[in-house]
Length: 335
Image 1: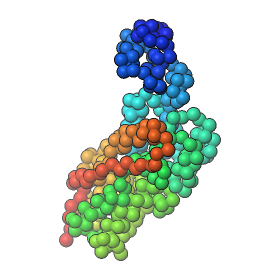
Image 2: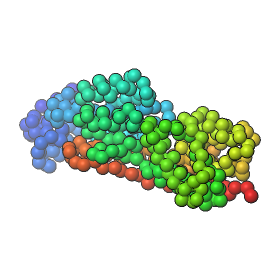
Image 3: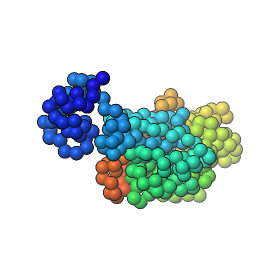
């Protein structure tokens, strides 16, 4: 197996120069760098991670914190993060730990403060547990996906605008009795995105003079959660809404299934809009506001790389655009 000495000899430079050329640490002329890289390719040389760490002062590892790994949004986001980190030559250290668990509390109080990481990408941070503040105290370059506060970097869509777009689509079709499906009652202290989406729905209803008709059917942001909340609200025949804005596509699909099992036709008797453009949205002909989690993952890595290079630069928020995708789950209400 080739060593750094072999690479240096072939390139005609010292071992120190060869090490700097391959690690990116310190000055090396462009010509020398090219010779060293060509020699490394010819010899199939791969730097040992511990040697690279010594040369650069970095661990070449980035911690990624997620509340779930089996949900579409998180798996797509993780794919984007992994792609970005591989391109950057960084290893991914994954912590998939559910909200409100003892293991998650230990992660923030014990594991992360003593783990040597070049940076952290945190997804689905809980405001109630002050997790973002605790991560800032770890003093490691940090990017959050979703939650944002002054002095930190974050990637997100404009959740409030997404829900407003979805609600305005229904209002433009002529709906007045529009309810919000899914999301926790206590979203403001637990789920950053859910709270903002609920706020966007209410803002759109208020702007249309429909504030008195706002209703929320709380439930988990999942298909079973949307189904349960949908059955609960649609089961009251005297107060059925004519349309749902769902907190996410999974909840929207659950609401569609609930409507069909109650004998309601979508969209003739109930219009439904989601937020995400989930993998299964097309299968259910779901009108939705598209977000792109894979692109959010790539953007999070790019922000983290900037933070790692810029040190104490002020926080930046990267907001990705979202768009309305109209399918056949929405229509004008029956007269």
